Length: 251
Image 1 (cartoon, one colour):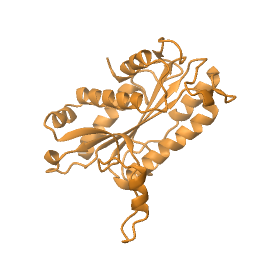
Image 2: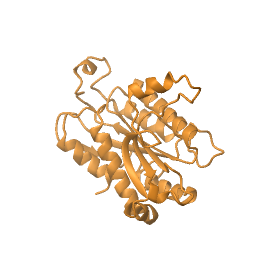
Image 3: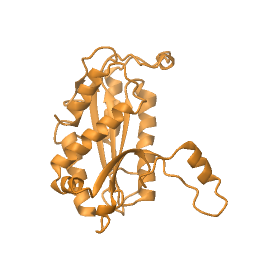
């Protein structure tokens, strides 16, 4: 199975999971990288020869940043740069074995976001997240491929595992028109293909549409209208092929 199917299977074995948690995101990231290895022989070879490695929830330098580290850097009195890379869901890093060539130190960065309910507010926030992620990645490393995945829930009803969130007026119901507007918004994302393009654009965005009610193990993948169909822009096949092509061009 490819990552989208594996992700849905994970949901069905973890019914009631918190979409704000990290476990589902880490699993999706690992599945994406496994599929990239199958899709791109060069990436697979460099993982197999320990030239590349995947790290979860780290900055582009491969280090996990904590609040204390961020505060220490921000209060640096020696005139050094006080900016700290926020943690990214998944960073493909070049190891010491792979630094002999011209490849980027962090050739691929993956960030995963979800919209399970309350589409009206959430879609704007997640859109801004995508832009902020791309800007961070490209300010730090202009050649890094910013791969952004947005999981959009198209189920008509969803039970939020967060009791406080369930009290929100818009939580729990997903009118079909609301999910479609969310999908259409992310379909309008402009892409970054080279250094001449604005840094606030992602190279490879993925729209992954699911139907999940938050209560029963009946989640399913939606790979037809209103979501992208296989092979078209923002679909999973397109997403993998774009990452692979850009990786070969830049490394």
